[in-house]
Length: 280
Ligand SMILES: [Zn+2]
Image: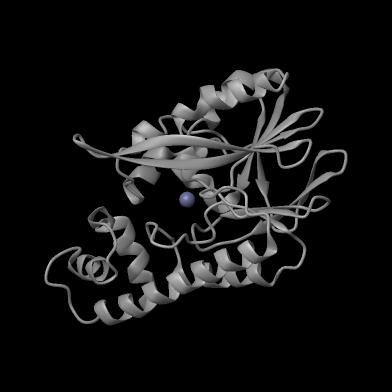
């Protein structure tokens, strides 16, 4: 989808294998900026490579034009094709320093955050060439200035990207989507980051990793309200359930997910870890 002449949003579909017999469909967005050089924001999973390359070719450009890849954070559905893109184009890879461990060492990431079917989503680490810092401005092309906003919560080094001239904000996974898997690193930081997104007045179009572009102010407000309500509902339930000693691992997680009427496959160590963070 063309958002402006040069800024495009590309949807990348993929599947997560919960077990050998069960797969779920997901998608993640990446952003492609067609300047003199091409800048990519996020790279989908490892199966996204061909779609990204084909899209660039369909737009009359060459893969070797890719100069920069910005990774909003380290999760496998954002970094999955990064190593292959870097190997093919010799582009530079940018990410926040707090994501370094999990981007440059995917074994550690899989150990600490075992997403089902992890290696089907990402099978190669990639080296970060330079770190993204809060308030850093990067010129993607003439009149395309990207301002980096550190937005911790979903992960420690998650960044949002504000396109200053076009008044577009890309929030990656920072805004929880109603009933989607609660997979944040720090609940309290997530609430703060959501508040920062809500109070900004420097964007009109909102892009996320998990939704089509949200282009009307009323829809942006509704989406943020819904995310906030979802977090409040999670917090109320989790605070009630996560009290005292657990009889067996994931017992509290199971109770919370059942009470919230969320899908059974949310009962897992990643969600449990996110929920335990509410008590701190
Ligand atoms: Zn994520």
